[in-house]
Length: 267
Image (cartoon, rainbow, N blue to C red; front, side):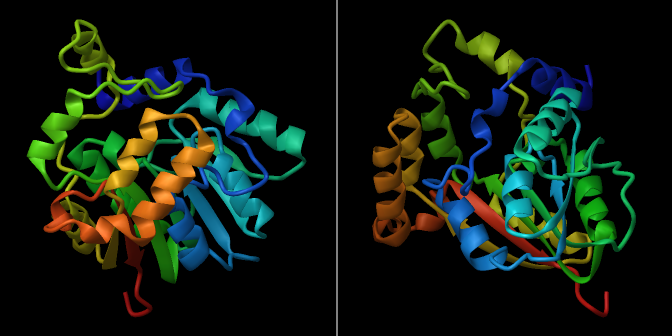
């Protein structure tokens, strides 16, 4: 089974329902989201934004409520069906289509922003390279691509992480010590591939972008140990403003990266 087929199957079978659609920022305790929408996508009124790998469309809805003209696509037909159902229920217009990130039939130079949350790490390297090129193609000159992705700059930390079980309602992960881990690993939709700061900078630079990165969060990875929103917000807020800066060599330990890639006017 190809990676694309695996992604389609996994997300067509994984129904999240409407719980992800909220009137405010999705996952407000998660500070990469706050960073992006408070600093980078804070004024999108009238701007044309493509939600790149939109899932069931929670960010599409949030962007549309902020005044953006949103177009959304995802490889999962189930996700797009959910988006259309929720859009009708919430009385918003969000054009959407089923498409893959590396072959998207949207017009060239037609978007002010490309936004993607946790999409690139689902792609194999050749797919990722083509997806980033598609982002560049779809953006207007002077436009910006913004992607939030998990970050692994330390192989040792990643190995340790695999042995700690996550009992999350939507994204559980058994410990590597457990008998269930082999089944989990076989069904995991994330291909084995680099997720380093250097890798993300290079793949965007190679496609012609002017690239900046923002690495965020160390202790906020503890938020997956609880579903209590107050505790999660306290952990992430403390980490974002204070705790992460106490860690020596913290570049090795950050949990997430925000890639800020600009298509220059002369590009």
